[in-house]
Structures are given as structure tokens and as C-alpha cells.
Image 1: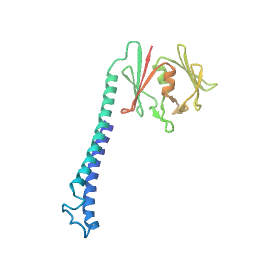
Image 2: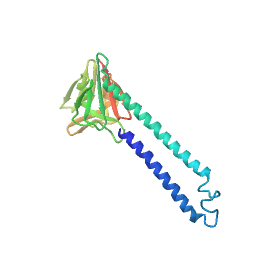
Image 3: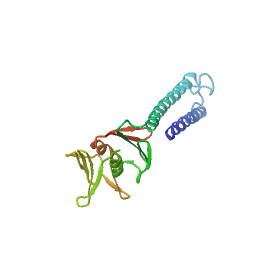
Image 4: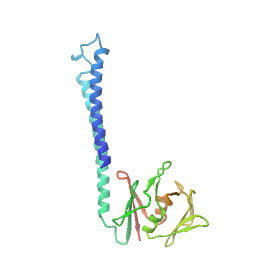
Amino acid sequence: MQSKRRILWFAAALILALGWYLADGYWGGREVHAGGPLPGSSEDPLVTKSYVDDKIQQLQKALEQAQTRLNTLEGELAALKKKLSEAPAAGATQVILTIGSRTAFVNGTPVELPVAPFQDAASGTAMVPFRFVGESLGAAVSYDGRSQEVNYALGSRKVVLKPGSLQADINGVMETLPSAPRLVNGITMVPLRVVSQGLGAEVSWHAAARAITITLIN
């Protein structure tokens, strides 16, 4: 809804700006064109039909673009609401998180997060609470105090990460993460897509709602 309101405010501001521009251009033209065509006459270039038509077309194009964007946002929001209302497939686990929100959904049930997911400023990667995601997907979560590594174990799958390091062991293969895991208020935040897919989960991004859906078929 905030995205929708922002677009409507943008369209209103655009209309006001165009009105101001036309008025300013016309009255300013009285001085600029002193000695030329009489302001307001059919020869005044500031009020010719082609000039006005051109400005109207520009405004219509801007409004059409805003409407297209609004329709896209509404479609994505409707899809997300539908996904929230639907029960996951039998034997599946579904987790939905929203950037900036501490409320997550696990199989449709709201859960309060210790730290809200966020996007890393440098890479744009979604960072999420390590323990919450792992336990929600049914993985065993552990911490090795000696090596300072955090671990996921789910069947034959295993993910090993270390806060501050871009290197991760994903199912026995060393991979470079887009962002290093880090501690936020004592909570380990990790790159969502890499660790979720390391456990065999499917990850979807809903841009309009800034929400992420993680689905794992058990």
C-alpha cells in the first residue's frame, strides 16, 4: 500500500509541477517575447495548440507509466497475499520473510524474529537470522566455539559458515558468498539465498512487497 500511495503522490506532484511550469512559462513569456507576438494571441508560441498538446501528451505518458507500475505492484502484492493464504504442498515447509520486518511466516503462522532481515548495502544481498531459517527448515543448527563456525545439517546436506568470512563450505564445496555473515545484536545474520539453496530450498523474491519465500520439500 505504501508503494501505491507513493505512485499516486508522484502523479499528483507531476500534475502540479506541469501546471506551475505552464503558468510560469506563459507569464514569463510576456517579458521574453516583448516586442514579438502579442501574448495570448494565436501566434504566441506559449499557447499554441501544438505546444499545449505536446505537454498533455507528456503528462499522459507519465501517468500511463505510473499506472503500469502500479498495476505491476498490485499484481505482485496479490500474488504474495495468495501465497500467504495458501497452505504449502503436503510435506513442504514454507517460510516468508520481509525486508525490514521482524514478522515472518512459517507455514502461514506468524513468528517474531530477533532481528529483521535486511539488504546488505554493498551487495544488495538479503541477510537473515541463521538459526531461525535453519530451524524453520528442519535443519540441526550448531555453533563451534573453537572455530567460531556456524553449521547447518539436514540429511546429507551441510552448510558451514564463519562470521566475517566470505568463504563457506556448502555441501563439501568451498564457495564465495556475496556478503560475509555478521553478528547483529548477538544474532548471526547470513546471506539468505546461498544457505537456503544449500539446504535444497527454493527461494523466490517479491519485489513489490520486498518479501522472500523459501520453500523446502521434505
